[in-house]
Length: 291
Image 1 (cartoon, rainbow, N blue to C red):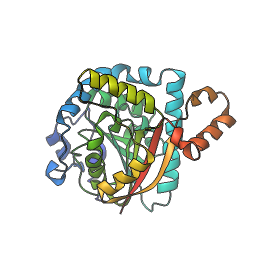
Image 2: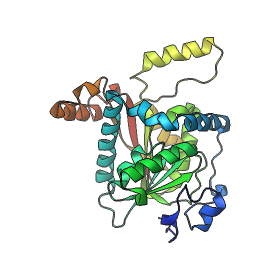
Image 3: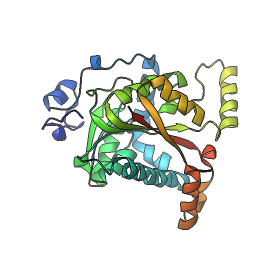
Image 4: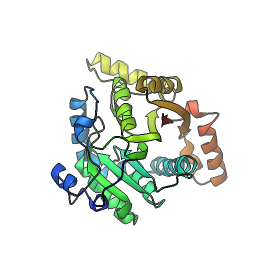
């Protein structure tokens, strides 16, 4: 893994807003020329940035304020901890994680609570401010490093991280953009490291996706539902080249939140979502390993 400069842990989005300031602080940020990514997502990115800047102040309340939302949040935390325990426990050094499209910090703060360092990058400055507030409230501000940047051209040196997470992001992009985005994540991960992505499960919302796409087609729109199944996740590894698919697990069974008050049944549902019934889970989480 590329070594970190001593000034990196002092770099904060709130304090170092410009690229020159971040570079002066000794960050592991790299020139965009190091990235070979070329995908047509500029217009989409601008739309995402504007939308999430507006949503940021109320995002957690809207997304996680009700019972299904809290269930989603808690189950994701459990999954992230399990992935870290099984994939990185044997590391002989303090590993470094990256959270692409970090939003308000659900993944980043979970990693910080494990006493490890994570770099959280997002295109929307207001989401980064919410992430900073969440990390402060959780007492892990010194573990979560914030950077304003784009997923399609990550501003980091090649091989800088041990693991890269990206949850609740890829579905915002067209399916054709997935290989390029994942290839860019793989670039900044060291050989032997992991890329963990979450996608919407094609079979969970198949009919709903189809109806929405039909309505969009009738209205003359060109943006359609973005989702994947297990077979497509395998194919994605072939398109990216440098990575191999290690596993796919399901996250959130239909109406699983109704079991929140029953810990034993909840654990059973969690196991079933990962194994036998993952094809019916709301989301699929794929773990790729960089060769």
